[in-house]
Structure formats: C-alpha cells, structure tokens
Image 1 (cartoon, rainbow, N blue to C red):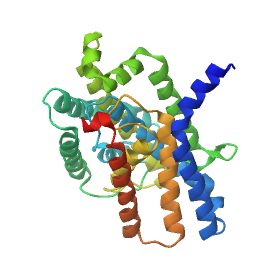
Image 2 (tube, rainbow, N blue to C red):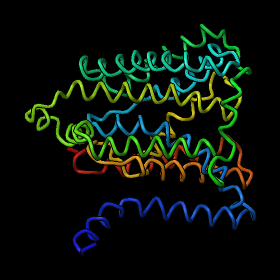
Image 3 (tube, one colour):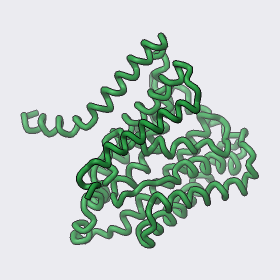
Image 4 (cartoon, rainbow, N blue to C red):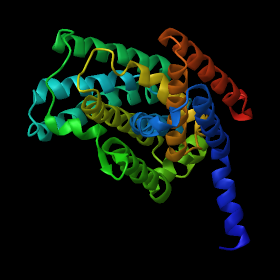
Amino acid sequence: MDKTSIRRFSDKVKVYYPVTLAIIILFVLGEALSPGFLGNFNNILMIASFLAIVCIGQSLVIMVGGFGLDLSIGAMVTLGALLTGKICNGSSVKLFLLIPVLIFAGIIVGLINGIGVQKLKIPPLAMTLIVSNVIVGFYTLITRAMPTLNIPSVLTSMGKPLIGPLRTMTVIAVIFIVVFELILRKTRYGQKIFLCGSNRNAAKLAGIKVDLIVISTYILSAIIAAVSGIILLGYVRSASMDMGDAYTMQTLAAVVIGGTKMSGGKGSLIGGLLGAVMITALSSVLVSVGMLASMRIFFEGLILLAIIIMDCRQPKLRQ
C-alpha cells in the first residue's frame, strides 16, 4: 500500500476517531465505577447490534439530504413485533407468510412518508411524526392494546451464541451492515443517494430522478424497521405497545454520533454501528451506577441535543 492509499484510508477512518475514543472511555469508566462491567461486553454489543440494524434506515433517509429524518421508525418496529405475534401465533412456519406482510406494510408507510415529504413538501419532522401516530392507532386497534407473549420458537435464538462468543443478533447486524454498506459504496443507487444529499440541483442536472431516490429511502427505512421488529421480539420474547418507542431518538443520536451529517451527502453505516455501541455503553454505565430510568432518559436527551447543535453548526446547514 503506497503513501497515497494510506493517506486516503486515514482520511476515511478519522471520522470514527471521536466515537471510538468515547466508547473506550465509557468502558473504562464503567469498569472503574462498577468492577465487572466489562464482563457485560457481549450483552452491550448484542443490544447495540439491534440498534445498528434499525439505524440503517435512518442513515439512508438522512444521507439523501433535504433535512430528512424518520420519526416513524419506533412505531414501525413495534408494528413489526406485534404483527409477528398476531400472524405467527407461535408458529415458526408462518414466518414465511409474515415477511411479505411486513415488507408490504413498510412499502405503504414509506410511500406515504416519502410522497408527503418530497411531493407535498411537508417537513420530514412533521410528516413522519404524523404517520407514527397513525401507525400507533392502527396497531392499537388490531391488537386491542394486548401484549404478545406467544412467539415462534425459532426467534428465541437471537440472544444465543452463533459464531464463537458472537450472538445471533450480532451476526445478523453485521450481515445487514455489510450488505447495505456495499450497496451505498459500490452501486449506482448508493452513489445517487450521496449525490442527492450533497446537492439536489446537481443531481437533477445529472439526470437523477431525485423524487424516486428520496421516496425509496423512506420505503427502505420503513421496511427495515418493520422487519427489525421480528428480531427485537425474538430477543425480548414478548411484544408490548411501546417496545419500539425508544429507538426513534436513539437511531437519530447513533447515526449523527457515527459521523453522518444532518445536512446529508455524507456518512456510513459503520459509523452508525459505532454510534449504537456508544449509546448502549452510555446507557449501561448509567444503569451500573444505579441511575433511575427517568434520569437516564434526561442525560441521553441532553447528549443528543448537544450533538445535534454541534452538527448544525456546519456552514451548509447555517446557509
């Protein structure tokens, strides 16, 4: 590898230095405050793995620009988990019927979000929040607010070791991230996402169908969130009405922490994974010192606010 290649590689990975340093500090701090904290590394990694999967959709929506974000992710995760319990009713065979249903649901929700944002020019924050409320109303109606306890037995392996110490959920996350990272870096579709995020006018002049690209990212985000509900159900082993709520803000925080710019056009799914590990490690440290859930939410909210404020200081956003 020549000096130019080394320099290029260094430029690509230096964006991960701050979040990597923060992760190391959190683990050292956790061990200092609560001896034995490092023994929970696999558990932290597994929880972060699920968050990283859900972050993929949020990353795509933010990368495509236009101040995009998806606040319906948490509701779609819950919908996916509840539909899994309702449709499968404990049967692993019925998972083959479930997947097309969740994909169809994701397409519908993503289309509504994308058309509202791109065609009707409704701000993404308002559009996706409204759709989130509609989704909550829908799954409350069909489930009558009853939790799901009867799940397919095949899903219970999510927390079990699969490859060495790596658990099933972590392996699934790695596969998801590798596949979508390759799509972003090696395909025309991925290049179009970054070009749209960098400069919408330039993308249009280049012949890119910007509306189609933007709407497609919202569709992918909804599908990934819905399918992720299956994975979360397998880990938690029960589905409740609010089980996905926390992941909406956590995905936003993890994606931005990992180096994806709110202005679009720049970012990576690997950064989202590192951001997910940092968010999960922070939560684990706060739990280990006995902090109340309300205070943890307060501190995590402050951190997210600080990160977004720093990100919004970019010249591109100020303009």
